[in-house]
Length: 267
Image (tube, rainbow, N blue to C red):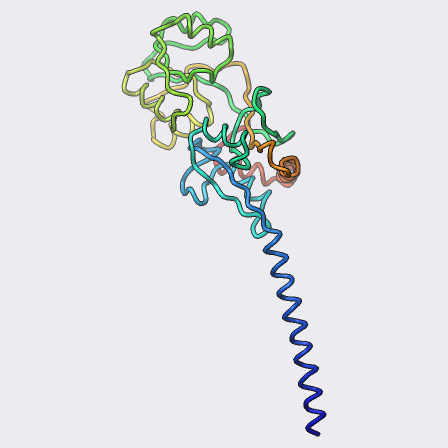
């Protein structure tokens, strides 16, 4: 009888040990599968919004969170100026950057489908009669302009050089560029500035400046921005394919339209 109980006890022990080993193996596998993707972000609402650096918001961030869910992935966001984020992503110090306009001069890996579209628009005080004409750049002769050097087309850059002291430049790596430009218009330091309409319109609404600023014309070019990945990362192509796949699924299901509505974006 005692011998029989010992055999039963040993069988139970071995079975429990096997179960414990299986659970341990599964947990270890899940731990190994978790990948950390470091993402450079800056304040560029409603595309990337630094509400909380550990978990920022914005359209691009929301799509990333869906494309690379926990616990398979860990998205680690690092807030930094645009130019530093661009440099670190090209070098591979960070895995990705949200967001950047597609540019063949930059060594980056771009998705094929996921794009957020905007236009460069001008803004003035409401009592200003000036209006920007993209087909006639002589309209810029009448105003003092706030700009970021090299953020514009070659045609506009050439015109800005002709205007000389009429143009007040901010450094390309400066933070909160759109907000600072709008504040300079409100203070009278400049008459207008070329700004991405999504970011500028968001700030105007957020700060209740609808009666203090008005849109004074936009360029003809539609700019496309997206999340970009470092070419030095061995899984960069896999990541952009995953991002594209998620984006197309969101569009087809109608969830992308809900995200656009969430941030007040029209595409």
